[in-house]
Image 1 (cartoon, chains in turn blue, red):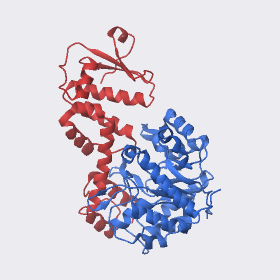
Image 2 (cartoon, chains in turn brown, blue):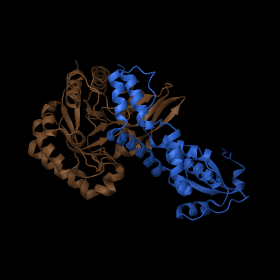
Image 3 (tube, one colour):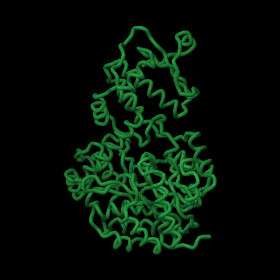
Image 4 (cartoon, one colour):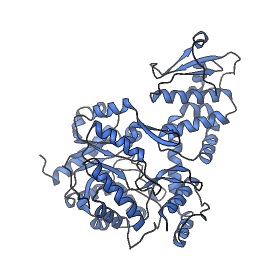
Length: 301
Length: 190
């Protein structure tokens, strides 16, 4: 059994985006750490039928230079840790490359699957993260992978909850999403990236009390919290991460933070394409508000 | 029960936006019932919509020239591409290059084929692909590209050939090239 060791507390983070340092100017120091996604620094080609990821070296150099003065954490999308056909092995190679350039305080991935095969056995990409059933087989698949990632870089590995819209996911043993996340952290030793906006979306979309659900979650395994906002699509809240954080999610943050003893960072997440919509002042407002919550609850060094 | 087969079924249903034949899959009766019930659900329809929306949005961001050149037939090309070509990668470049290849294969107007070829070369150059590419235009490049960007009617197809060099080493990634210079280079043909 891999023992979970919480990382050092970092504070308030933001998603690295090219040109951010210049855009923030004097307010750059609102950010205590950066969350870096290798996916945005790479391209993918098919090489003899196999996927191959390669860094755009100019983008990688820019990212390393722009984040040089602050700690970084890694947040991936392309691993497909929940794929029964196999995760994206090549994604581990680009993580290795990044780690060789720069160590990170923790790394994380989405608890979902993106890769599968068609009826002819040809691999394809689903184009959108799809949920795992809350079953023993899914736990048996993901827990060893999460444990392997906990060991790989000498830094904690976190799994992120995400928003899904499919009703009545198959479940065993009376599990729901919370019970599944708890079992996963217990079996693997991994931590949690609690995306509070995604959690809130699921609570609204599937009509459960988010506070009651959070009260059952292994909050001692929450290392990072994501804040975000989006818009409704029909009767569903969606997780496009393109807006300011709604008040209901700030209320959840106020509830969670004092109950998550190993929380090491809060990140406001917004899509690069939505930055002009939210605006630099909007982003800084989110960071300042998150910092106020952080400082109310933690003694800073 | 097989998680593998459940994912095959679910992944296929989302990309096809409907029920598929999964008789060959090792699914329990409960899983089959669940999958069949999904099709009519708003949550499944939203999931399919988001999947398609991301594919279309990526193409609209990255294939602007070609979609502008296609004009009102752009939507039809997008729909046909999404229906016929399975998504192979979450990354933008493979998806966009796949679409531009699709347009090159299907477009009737030679200027649109040229624009799709030019846009592919520009994308590769922007990614730092070291290869230089010469694109053959059937009207002066600035005139054709200007018409596309302004939404004006495309210029007449000429018998004379015009050439454009696309290279990651160029400041704007491309420039017109005189025929005399072409004698020293390979021309890219479809």
